[in-house]
Image (cartoon, rainbow, N blue to C red; front, side, top):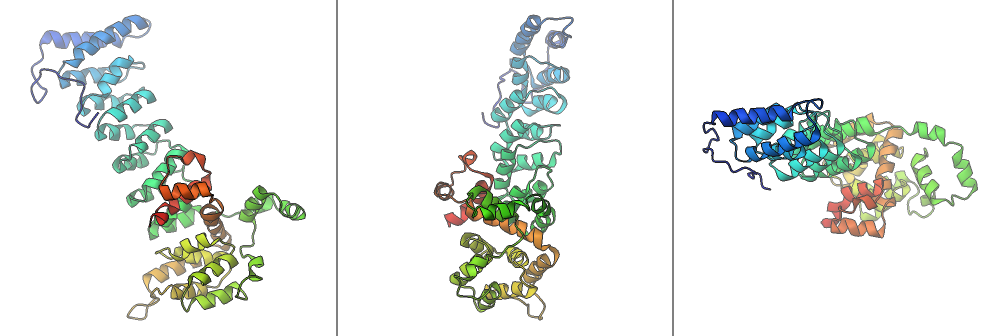
Length: 408
């Protein structure tokens, strides 16, 4: 049903304010009164019969008459289904009386309403107290940024994990939603780290301050598992991947033996004269990253990931400048002052702790590389987000972060 659709076709004038016969007004009031009688006064069959009669009258009644009935029924604990759906599908003047004032509308009735009415109806639903996960998911599925914004501003809305992931995806084309989303208590690091890639500087600062968590509690909890896994030769791929995420060491010592550079510092020094693809891959390997993760970091226009990389791997502050120079980005302006972009990136380096930087970096590497499978790569290239339930959390993060990169 389109935004102007209505199930009513009464004979009132264009303004819907034709004079109502006194008998009709009295009858509508009496029927509404009967429907609202307590269960001790009327049984379900009598209530249903009265509701059916009221529905037939309301179909040809004027909007103001239907609004009066809707207001009368708003506080009713159990409204007959045919009656409530008729009024919810009515024009906003009528439906508002229920959507704003009735706390007893079922999720089924609200979902039926949002799929069959106007955007204004959906806005009123998004503003209701205690919007459930299933209703919020349905509203998000309508893909209307204005409605999603209303949901995010409503502190009493409950989002499902999948619904929140859908909102995260929406923020790619609607960056104004990002600050609102970052305020939500349902947000998890898995959501924030992937949204980081298309966030502005202010949102990135918020993400790093709020979600760059320490892994100390995990390190303390599984400290005795590392020697156990080592004694088994790291044969179990599941435990190996998890322990790689938790361990304190970031650099890949084994990569030194295969690298043309003596150390990560040596590779950074070479990169400042011009970062080539080969040097970028070597820096990635030496930093314990896959080349895909490194490519995402080095091509990021904001530059903050460079600071995360350097801090997580124990590189000095000068390494940030070296990489910045190697990417041919301006270090100073005409007055000789540090450019705002480099200054912002250096501030990130100065303010984030090593352990927290490692958490961010490893999550990026986990989601952007180790989670990759041929099926996921195919889904990213084809934009197959409909099959999202088939993928794990890091795989879905990779799909969100890389889908447009593959489309270039």
